[in-house]
Length: 101
Image 1: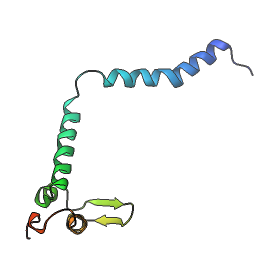
Image 2 (image 1 turned 30 degrees about the horizontal axis):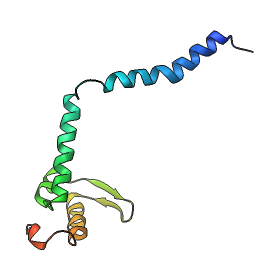
Image 3 (image 1 turned 90 degrees about the vertical axis):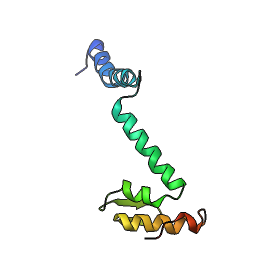
Image 4 (image 1 turned 180 degrees about the vertical axis):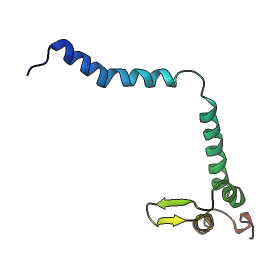
């Protein structure tokens, strides 16, 4: 059964054009408060990592964190995550940067 050209055009427009039109409208204007909150926490997390601030990193992740690294695999738990960062960051951070626990 052959579809009329108008019906085919409506199906194509609904499938390919309208979804992108809505996305464009959402991205205009000022960022919403959720975006700003996520952006601020992202900045804080990576600043703590870049400055070897393990206390801040530790305070930002939960005890039951599950982190998957492409080379070392799954790490479960806050302390495992922090120890992995401490061990891999020793080359770029002085030992004085790591607070004793």
